[in-house]
Image (tube, rainbow, N blue to C red; front, side):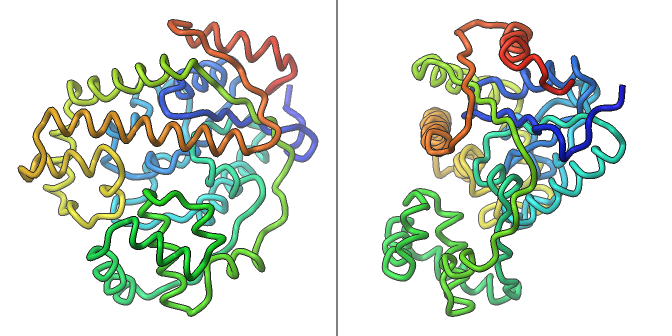
Length: 316
């Protein structure tokens, strides 16, 4: 039976921190309902970055079609606003074809941009951006955050002082246009997209952190260092936008001899746990999430059953 129109039914969105098990549960849930997955992961959008982003494998993507994975090169800056536009277009196309949609991801800003709409930041010439970036690299994240606090307190309050990528973007908008990111945001929010049903996966904090640590060890065993070497062979390295994120930054330093291998692993684990903590903080402040508790050792199929029992009309 053809599913209801996009406007008449809530769109399911599976969220949660890294390591919670969203990928496996999402694939199982989508497979059972004949749905396709729209990814809301801010790093899986990048090509050639598979192991370090825990991207769904080719086998997993053969089981369930994924959208907005592998869509840009690592040196491309991809904004939440651009994600929102592309995700809306994809979801509309699937709705026209009568294909159920499941959004899966842990990038809170991406999900916000999809559901609520997001501002269109100004275009800044590449060369000007390069010169600004060179200046920012001479200062620590704490110093840049302090400057942002003086220029745009509202943005500084939203952005963690260790989130260098977003700090630089906020400063970049101000330094290039003379207007703060907050002022751009205020006048350009789009209308809400459609009804959603936010389903969150949560685990015991200690169990979640243990899963994250184990995932990093598995990444190393699966050839993460070789993946980063491959990126370097393609011309990507220090200064490449996507490789400044956790995991890739540490492995780059390790390859360049700036970080001991054991220290690299422990630092990646620490930064991954910190990222999960920030995600949890974001989602705690997000209204309307129905949380599903995942027990340690629980099979994704069993978690899927919990979701179906809780929301019997999901995707039907």
